[in-house]
Length: 380
Image (tube, rainbow, N blue to C red; front, side, top):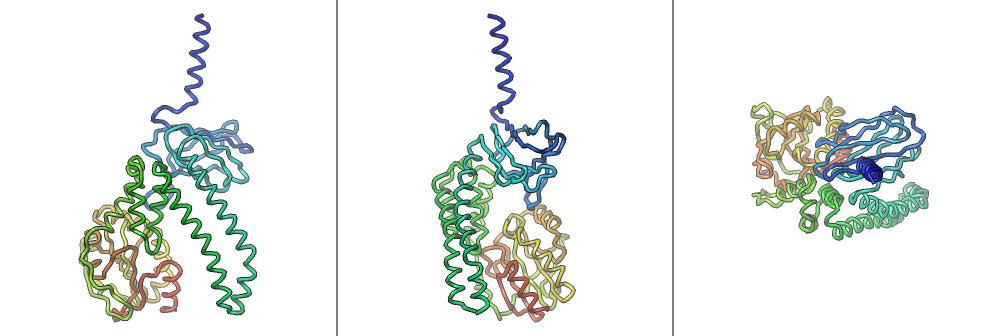
């Protein structure tokens, strides 16, 4: 009888060693064809959008294991030495299993926890739309090229309209998922992504956020949604919008060292007035484009004045350094109540104004390729 009890006890210990505790995660990956000793790194994206490693283990007999504690669910990545690409998954407490194909890492199966199973389901539905989109592109690329050569705007617009239906499908899928999955972590990621649109539907975002379970609202991403909504819903005294061909109002504000800097002393041949904030994800995503633009055109007369709508000096200064914003940076640290933002009628960020040497507005609210094209046109 004692022997049986000892055997059962031993089995219990063995089984428990392979199971995550109540507040613990165990990520187990299986991969064939990779030599023992190769490194596997667990990575996470920080506030600046940079990936940072948080743990590294070695492959042994075609397997690797990460153990730890997760305060809340969040997107992470697995990077395997000598394997091209990374594996996205949701790190959360529980047993997470990965079956990896080293030659096709994008088909990795991640199972074992609620949020990863939900991520699989969501991606599968998206993949079906993606497949239709790719077929449409394949079937119509030659037709579009011929229409472009002939400058057949009717044919081009028809194809663009048909293609836009796939984007509508993606949007419908996301809206439907968020509405029916209030406890899924990826619902928060989907809602947060809605702020990246040129004209975010604040009423829809608010509705979706209010429908989330408290457990999702309490995550870092849930809190970001609330912060963005609060910023956009604050009563702000907004001046009349500043239009193209009008004169940009003069202003001055402290730079990171506390020195007052004016627009007048910061002008170039052309100047971009950029309204942003360290907490604004679309702003941070746009900053590398601004850095490249400044590098290419500053010698030709381009200046940039970045007006931050931050409230905390430390976060503002940290973002300037992280994003390598080497031009004029100023802020009154008053969020959307910043007098410059009020003066310029700013309701959403990022917002940009391009002014000439006299201070006249020649363009506004351009980003990415459109902004670069306009600056190239102005400065050659």
